[in-house]
Amino acid sequence: MPKLKSKSGARKRFRVTGTGKVVMNFAKKRHMLRRKTQKMKRKARGTQIMAACDAKIVKRNFLPYA
Image 1 (cartoon, rainbow, N blue to C red):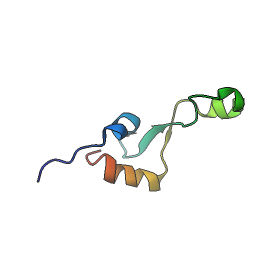
Image 2: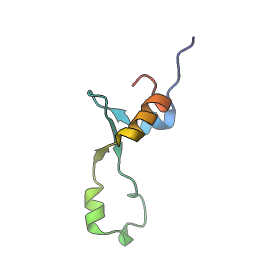
Image 3: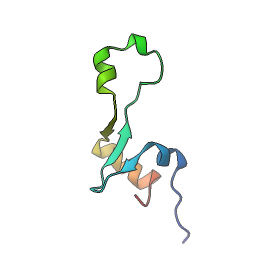
Image 4: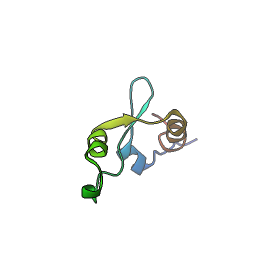
């Protein structure tokens, strides 16, 4: 069997920690920021751990060797 390829879009957006959790950036930080509250913009800094149900899909389908 040939090696499975990772989805290149997922490779750029997600990374896997040493314990196997998927880390991702926050959404909704690109444009129309004047409409969003300061609290939302402050909480959306940095990265967050993906929910376990979504992480299972990403690891199985998009990042097969992560």
